[in-house]
Length: 284
Image (cartoon, rainbow, N blue to C red; front, top):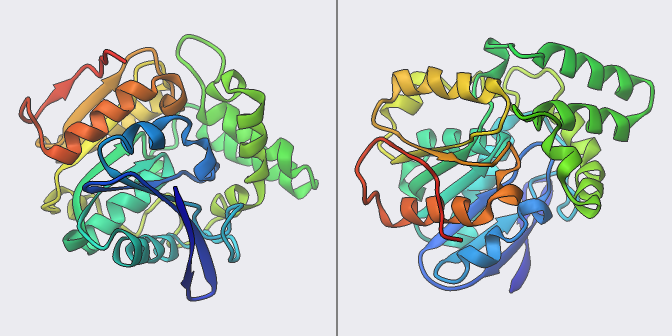
């Protein structure tokens, strides 16, 4: 694996590159650095050139944490131009999916396909299933100086399972620590901002007409909010491919890495079943 620091305006991004073949770029969420992809990068690197990076303000990169999603979109474009150096499959998890969607609408020349895992796209416009109490609880703990507790509070809500409990509490202790180490960057992204991480400055109509193939992954055990956000977009983009990952929650990359990798691989080579919905079952 090759690691480099990509210099940008006001930051340097830590990028890991492994494998050979067509490029796949991984974009992590608001509460996670690149270390929490689990086995996914190594599995994808068996037949693709995999690039994962820590976004601006996250642990291995330099730069001030920011809620301005436009900055994160510009950084992703720089990774694609400076590291991938070819149109890539871009896989965004959680709010990383928002960044991937926005980039595809602005620079479709850099993207061969987009895969998103439960992005909170326009999430504040649909503040259901306890989102507002979760945000207020996290910000209250932050104001009291309890930043790691604030991050854990929000992670537990974001990772809630239909079957009970939370993906955050199910994660190994070392993964939980990595998540809590991202508390400052995550809480910054939760701050109100006109172009914040929930992507209200990107129009759903722009995503709908984007020519880049879109693949939307859902964990069958995730909280209902992600299903509702997906349904809103499915009505606008009936051509997008939906993959449901069985026995997986919002942290599907840890719950079912093989099924997630299979979905990304299929997106990278083009659909073999046609447009529609698949069940996310995997022999892995």
